[in-house]
Length: 396
Image 1 (tube, rainbow, N blue to C red):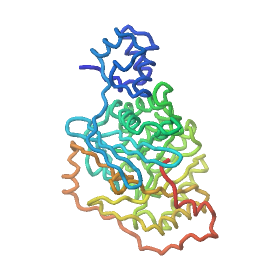
Image 2: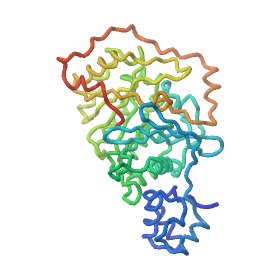
Image 3: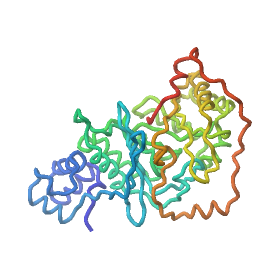
Image 4: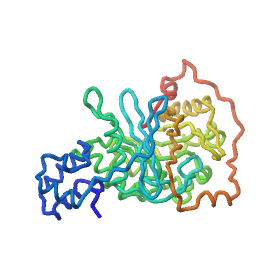
């Protein structure tokens, strides 16, 4: 079987070439050809000796996931379904904006965490993606999108927020991150690469030392009682442990804050009492040095979720309460929902090995008790600018 060179970061590729009897600079050449030149055939690598090209043709490959389907939203968001073998497909999404282009990358075929508001979790879990399948999404999208009129890459930011929990596929994700950051790979800044996690505390501590990129934490609740229901991982790593890990991460983080993601669920976590509890939680940990911002995410419905999107007025009132308390808070724009490419909607094509659908069918329906709705006051022109700005934010 040929070795897929997409699985190697520069250090691993250098070691591989040394085993082939080649000098270290050859690894840098090949890495640039693959990731900067978009080469998938060794004959394209014209500055390599013919003997080396022949050796690579015989023993190696640049194995890119094949395209299964492509869609484009009315707002310009693009989604690709890529074939990762044995009947499985993963989705990657590109979100274009005036000042940046963000690629949302998947790390697993499905997800085993079963967060109630996420379509991916309802598809079950098949396996972790290899480093080649993770970085292959960036390779594929980078080649498909090309460059801007100024000869700059269209993809300026990468977020590990697609299908799966990145920290549950730690080693392969870190290898892919290394390639993204390497000057011989994609040369992205640590500030422009974000890993999102539901709160796998030990892996957060490892990432701080191994590859400290920007960090986003899927919080979604102000207390353990609610979070246990909608993010089951909280039962293993409750809020006290998670907040402490966030504090530790800041010591090495490329940004001076942690981003907390908070999906707004009607009557579940979106009431003024929840905002007050969230403010108290942040203030309690600010004394230990925690610095953060919040990204409120309108819930994107999917079949059988049993959940509803919070009304826009409730989202704005919630954001205003946090902003007025001194917590920088924005509201994420919903992008690509007409092609199921918005946050929480990615499902791909998963051959589930966890039988999640069967288990859910056997279980009694979990009722997330909605609180009586209080009609919030709409933000006025006299309110602080920070509160008014909360109406429009995007990916990190």
